[in-house]
Image 1: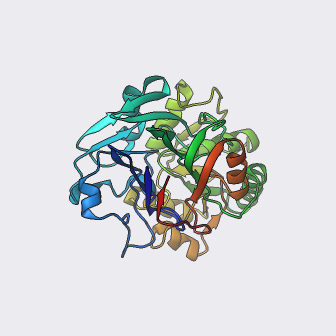
Image 2: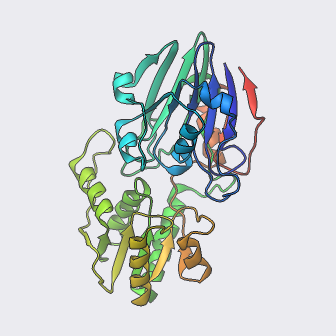
Amino acid sequence: MELFIAGGVGEHGRNCFLVQGETIRFLVDCGKMADTPEDPYPRLTPEQIQTLDAVFLTHSHADHTGALPWLYENGFRGTVIAAAETLCQLPFAVRESCVLQELCPNEAGRLQSLSIQWGRSGHCTGSVWYYFAENGKSVFFSGDYTEDTQVYACDPIRNQHADLAVLDCAYGLDETSYEASCDRLVQKTEELMSTHKLLLLPVPKYGRGLEILKLFSDRLTDVPYYADALFLQNLAEQEAGGFWYRPIKINAPVCPYDGQPQGIVFVSDPQLRSKAAQRTAEQVLSLGGAAVMTGTLEKGSYSERLFRQGNMALLRYPVHLNHAQFEQLKGENDFSRTIPYHTKQFSAVQEMFF
């Protein structure tokens, strides 16, 4: 087997890995870089793209899927394979797809000569890790992974054996614990609420938002909560339960936002790119409110503008691994070689044979 790193190592974004087996060639993820519009796409040649059999997606976020339209433009004719929920979350159509749960029922299956195992990675509905093996060689991909999750189910990565593993290390050398990050987010949110009374929280369409609501509902019990239609839909799905969720209850009523002067408003658009999200942000600010970003700011986004204007605070809610957790995960498994991905702080050679 051979691994070609097309993006996502030594940088944050455009996660994309090309695996060449003896009889099959496939990608794991095909993301787009938000911060470099002059060079946003994976480092793949037309020949590499046109000979792909498949693309396996770990989840739907744009830094893992945003380059799929570009892949089609450059001649991709293979199959996109992902959890049913991931395929439904994509903001564009895919030409030929295969539902992971049907290809690999009971979390295991085959594609041609390729043996596949998968599990839930705790990042959002539909997010998975993968194990691939062919003719005695194997490679593991954690996807965006966390066991520190209150809402989403995670199948812990334990006792896996692989020749090569690509593991989440997005937070790099920042070794702040999950508990300390949560404490800081709650404390700073309380301080902001005491001054502004009204806060806007832009969150991804799928993922972190429900985790933050769970945290706040347990520790900020006297705050009114509001959200947009997609957030309310995701909350309703969580309340109904199912395969992708832990069996927990979020003890906070959440209502549509309609100009109320106090509370926390969740908007399912982290960079505030849509006109609707921007109107909500302007409404919150006009009422003396402020905004809080719990993830990564993208250059040129409306969220970055608010930050530069002094209207947005940066308070991380952790949904990835740091280097200490990366090392711990290595120790809990048998990986001959490991690659930390999703961070600028560590790099690797672009091409590996194993």
